[in-house]
Length: 261
Ligand SMILES: O=C[C@H](O)COP(=O)(O)O
Image (cartoon, rainbow, N blue to C red):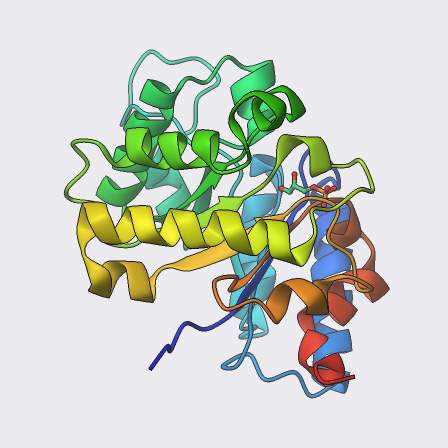
């Protein structure tokens, strides 16, 4: 029996300063409390900018909120002369549970290769963080190789030699769907997520493949999330733009109210 707890994760990207982050998390907590959200049934996480993490931690701790949070990136290194880098250990010390690795914006704008992503996945695990490995194809990849080839090869590369990584989340984000308003169809996303789960089973066995949550990301909003969540291999969403709007994000988190409608 599948027991994967769905995860709805908001990637704020470079939005919200620390004061705005406090206001947003407070509003989110109130809205979800009002809606009697069952955090045991659907986990909620946010990925604020680094400079907001301490504020989010203070609020979460003070109000005993069940909202998880994580960094949007981490250094492959532990410490030392790496100006501008943030160590996984620092994120752990701030109460982060998760960290994004290999978001397409990092791969494209910061030249993060599969090898760098592999080192970052290893660094996350060493620091006790759960890496949320982002994989996805560009429209050119899609045309040349089909949808699953690039995400599957990115997953293989990230896990190669990383035997110590026993827990991760995989976010399938077709690059062409990010911020475009044009999400993949649930069937397209399911096909790729199925291929990713089969790859994980081949690399790490059926147990880990069965336990690992696969998220879909790319123009997810309240009006399309239910379609994705009906697919058997999709266990949640990584949400960008819509995670910055309280009504949209809280409606996404509470998608179960609309399942069956
Ligand atoms: O990490 C989130 C993704 O990049 C999706 O962004 P989006 O929901 O704005 O398309």
